[in-house]
Image (cartoon, one colour):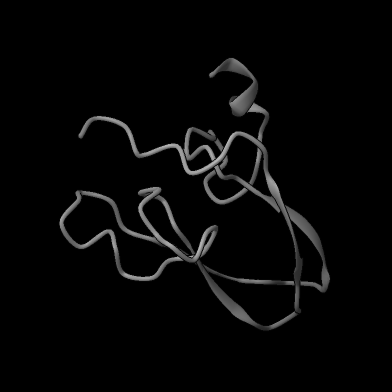
Length: 79
């Protein structure tokens, strides 16, 4: 598995809450996209765990090809 599974071709808008911790799925296998559900265990990927610094709408990557892990950078347009 040289690249993660593409879970979607558009980012997902998520309302992040300041101080809350999130675990973004980096493998594309989670059934709880864009968040981790532990499906990465048989893969070489690990979730990206981060704490939201502010309450805001963020666009989380679903194609898993982003250069800014967790967040959409438009990479889905090249798929």
